[in-house]
Length: 294
Length: 335
Image 1 (tube, rainbow over the protein chains, first blue to last red):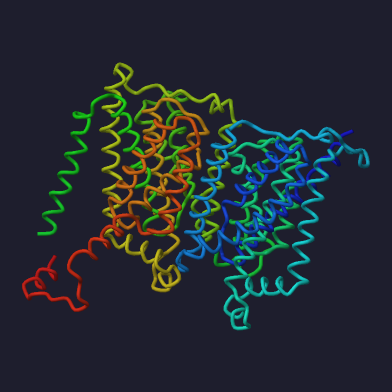
Image 2 (tube, one colour):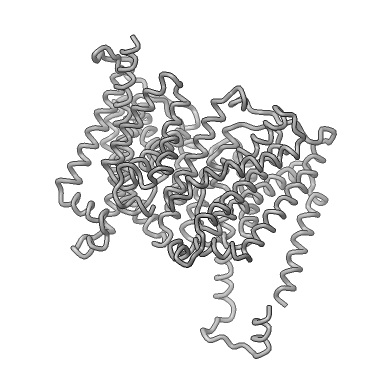
């Protein structure tokens, strides 16, 4: 009996870890191209969740359809944000000031969400909301599977774009060495904008996945930003594989610890991992050389 | 001449603050003034680490909350007299800030901010979940230090107490600003590697500034607990309080002694206004966010240098070669 329970937690942890991995990959992109820690990432996540909810409320269609609109919209918003806001900061202080700037964006989004949709908790009701399937004895909700599938597909797409396309090569070159990339004729400013756009697109996908199986409210993003930040520090700032591994590990640990400790205390595993990382290995456990100075 | 006018301005400022309760028309205005003074204490305390070293902490609400809860718990659980509890809570937070500082200051820039935010979130979680001790979301009532006073007199007493605490923090900032220690901290802000190469004990200096800042913030929090009398984790360990401190200090100017106080005055009045006007809506979040964005984008050095720059453009242009008389030169050399 406890074996099944343990197995079920493990599966749920993997499913949660997939979503964390997608979102952490987005954060890593921003940090890679601009050395920006994007506090507003999870605010955009919640914004996308609200848009999916609103879309479902108005049209009655499946919230997944809203991705057709939100992903391009968020991509453009990301490019615009990089061009209009982040690029204006002084290069010397960009890391510190961008944190404050994106923090300001997060507050504004949270406030506007509260203004437009009120602070009431919202949840999407779907015909398959309550459905679950039996997976080797573990009961897994269908919506969680869909959310994981969405995250996994998006991560795979991101991986293919980064490794198989000329744009992806240019993006990785910009992350590794901006000056050298410029010398090779890469327009690093444009690439940085697109990198930002890609990052925000992950928030759009993640937000829709989130809207499927959880209750949303404007201040929800604070519950996400802490774990996500912890993940990218543990993984090593700027390393996409590092972030993905850390996301999986911490997601599974959180899910397993929920059994003995309950949901609230299990969250502390992220912060403990964060402090432990800083004490033992400040550059992160799976990180590249980018992390050392930041 | 210049220093004389400075002393006069200071004396006028102090007199205005001290006389404010006499001219304030009602208890509400007085309580709003106490709130603004408490913001001034917090953002000036924040500026001890943020302004000198350039390490921007978005999580100073952690020390505010620890100071408030520390004071409250010492009074309610251990029966310590109110103001002794306040001092003890400051001491406890100072001790706690040492390991936190060691962990947080090992990393620069972005990671430091992440740790500071994480600290607030984890403390919020702990104080909400640990119901038996903290009362959780039901809140914790702090007994008043002067139970015989009526509400307006209570505000009056705390107005002066906060003013005294503010004076203490300002004095500390001023002393550091003029000391060798302060010079080292500023060197860290401008270029940490060069500072280290020149022999500044950067880690020890950063840690000392961090602990001092956390302690002052905790004293502000403890004083708030004694004044307000009711604590809730959501409000004490709130990211918003931490961001107010940063916003106020940046808006006023982190390199100026009175910068954070000026910022607290502007932002504090605006916040009170928004709360009155728009009540429980989330509008104050939008206003705070937009204001922070504008400050970061257009005047990252604060309003004092921005206004000075504007005035300098209007006034007589400064030539690159300054014309000074021998007498003036003599005076400049001997301060």
